[in-house]
Length: 434
Ligand code: UD1
Image: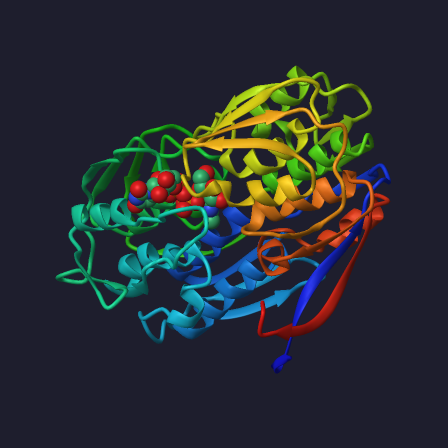
């Protein structure tokens, strides 16, 4: 039965064709979302290039539009113009905020620019508990009064302007480091943040803020020293390439015994991932602005532990497990960042993988090949892993949960088709059973 005429997308994948060819890296989702939020800080117009056409960018655009930011997005060319001259409200719209964790990125800029903000608590994300306690602790250190009621975080700065302070993050947090930076750039005085995340996307945000006139020292290190300025101006900036997307496709070259080159991409951002591919016996060729991976060699087993940058990225955990299921021996992966990241394990098992999960650890035993099956993508990166397994499988797979995949992978079926993958999108009526 149709649910009020609504439809839902599925991906139909027929495995067996090697992925061969070249593609350009898209703009980074995880860099672009905080950069878009940071446009709130500008007295002027921000112009962005290489903005990915993914649904999370659409969600952030809607949140910013409600706040009063003028957003124009040329999806074909990845060109976006954000005009924050007038902020109309400091209350972020709940219906969009609840769609993605990164919505909370607007809180730091709202506090810095307007002295107040109200943003819903991140919704029940499938990677596990997504707490914002570090974000709140930093805002308090900088002088904000923060309360959490009715599912929302409300923050207000007495006097309207944050004051510089010292904060040490108890553990590494990408989002909290970004929010703290965005709050501190317009604060009175100096802020020192210790134990910061060093992810390239944090660095990209910092570089963007500097082009707006922010004063930040220690970019790319664990300690950031930020001298608040009175105002920030508009700027033009090119978002960094998406290392998670690029590496997902490169794993596809190994799994399908193909040969993929990702252009417009600097390999220095995925050193630990490339080291793993080489240890797994794969041929990796690094150029100045491209990476090529040639599959076809036997895959050797690995033992991987995810870690904050420069360690092995948690977002590459599912694609790597999908690859290691085909390795000749027993592999393991320990997840240290998100306790709920294992939702996809049973889906890979449906496709034929031999996986055993215990706590935050998964043991991966060799199987000869995957076999097509209907599967559900439970989150963005798990979705990427399931598509790769389906492309490597014998037979046809039907992938549900495409809305997660669309949050983070730009034109995924067009990209994969251009590499020779047999994948198509079908739109079907949404039934009560979904
Ligand atoms: C970002 C990325 C996500 C990536 C993750 C880790 C974006 C939009 N998303 O997510 O793709 O997987 O970094 O590289 O950039 N934590 C707390 N309290 C806090 C904040 C975090 O306990 O206030 C915990 C989290 O529950 C998690 C860990 O710290 O266990 C790391 O989370 P964090 O680095 O903040 O991830 P995000 O910024 O949400």
